[in-house]
View 1 (cartoon, rainbow, N blue to C red):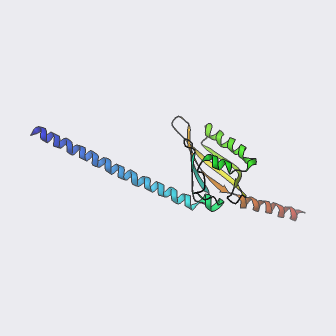
View 2 (view 1 turned 90 degrees about the vertical axis):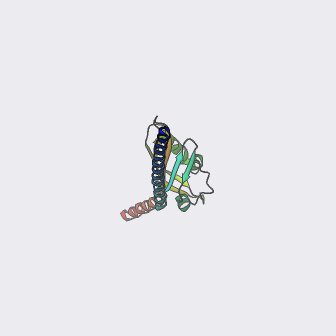
View 3 (view 1 turned 135 degrees about the vertical axis):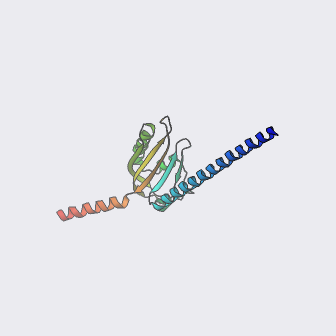
Length: 170
């Protein structure tokens, strides 16, 4: 009977431990759901094409702004870093490829640059792109998360203003 009581006490202790583990997991899952929902809302709230590049798989996840701002349907995009590089204007491509890989392969925690990006209609947008490099415990880059801002309109406005100022000066 003592042995049975000891077994029942141990079983009750295991049940409490299991119940606590289940409770903690539920709390963690709710927190993760909230974080994921916050990320989805932030990605929708911006006009920037937000991207998340996993270096191990070369897989890139884009938000809806890629389609809204640049016309590339997410279902038609090859979700790789290679696809992104291929959309960069040929005159800018090597420079951007070198600069982003220098940040990834070096010790940088961030990267930014400007280039021309091909829209789905074949025209090019002027882009200011920036990203944050995520590294593992050994300092190896594992992911990069960033956002492409279309600055075409701003550059065109600046050019028009410069022309107007030059005409006024003359």
